Length: 359
Image 1 (cartoon, rainbow, N blue to C red):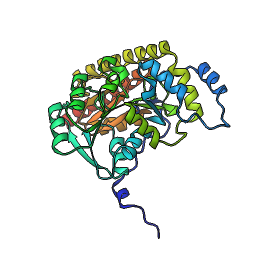
Image 2 (cartoon, helix red, strand yellow):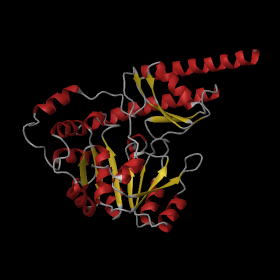
Image 3 (cartoon, rainbow, N blue to C red):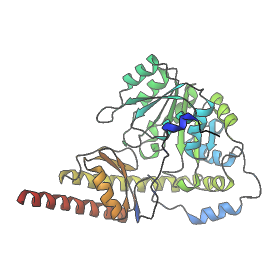
Image 4 (tube, helix red, strand yellow):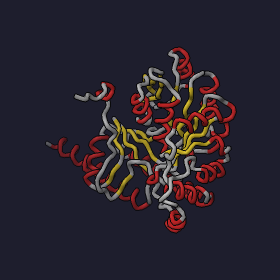
């Protein structure tokens, strides 16, 4: 009888929330709809009876121009998830030590364990601040082969300054993988994209799922030096990015003005949500709201699970973490509805406390 490998015994499947909810503020997508006209024109020219371009040349070129990087240093992937898997499978060997900074995106550990790498975790401070000196020392003492982290961080919404990331790369021999999925919402000045050619141990990941508003087509990019890029293109499957994704991605990435306008609107809405949640801190609905460098807010509350379930009952989805909620910015109407229900929950809490004190 066939028996599944023992490594799967410790795995739990990643299960995104499914179902119909009128407000989805849980998965950090863009609330801005992509221009349908451009998509229709793009897919009309996609030859679906042919295999896609194995290197997604036009899409890569559009990405490279938009972000001012050398196109020969870019690898396109079926979302950043595929690229994370390729790094784990192709650039590391069984038993190599991979370091993650907890809390962070759980798929880093998932793919590393899938390819039988040893995952080690370094827990961030109580306020989720990363001590760079501590990380560097940990890497060097423990012979860490690879460090992978999101910057800005998902879920904490905090960022590590570029000067500190450069120290990580320069003062260790480990492969440093910086997932910049949310960098568009912080500052390109903090990005490591322009440092790629200066190091032989750096990979920067970018995605089209957030600021580019194309989560549905699964398109991501890895940017690295020539040696690493060649290795990634060697281990990836020949036709990993489908023709429709390439066509749509090229069309949207080629419109720099639309891209920048979208980011502006998203940042404005995120700021409005942040300020509103700060107000709820004063009312006691949250204990703390963290400064954000992303398109979402991370808020501390000891009643996170209770609030999460209450919101779900009202058709509003956010993301629940131990003692915290992560809320993505949405349209003004979506955010207003979320804020209305949060306020209603707090009123219910106060009424409950009053009833208990009277009884």
